[in-house]
Length: 76
Image 1 (cartoon, rainbow, N blue to C red):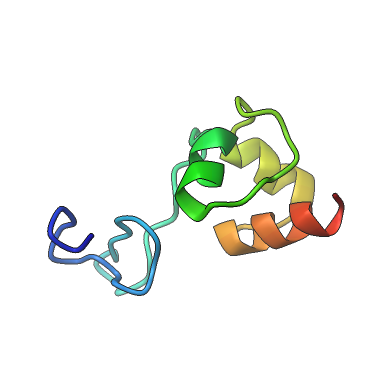
Image 2: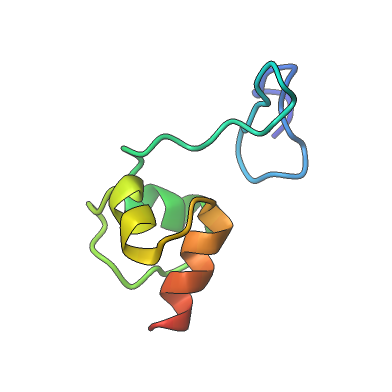
């Protein structure tokens, strides 16, 4: 996985997740679809596949993908 990711990749994260100039992890884009997250993290969010991540963040009150996944799985 690290071969296709850039030099700022956070190796402990699923997929390519780089860090910004302050060393903090870059946030996943809000227009990422639920089906993409389900496939990448091998989870079932219990929502429509075309739901956007920013909508799921608003619905759950979570900002991290892990928080969104945990909140949605808790309610399913």
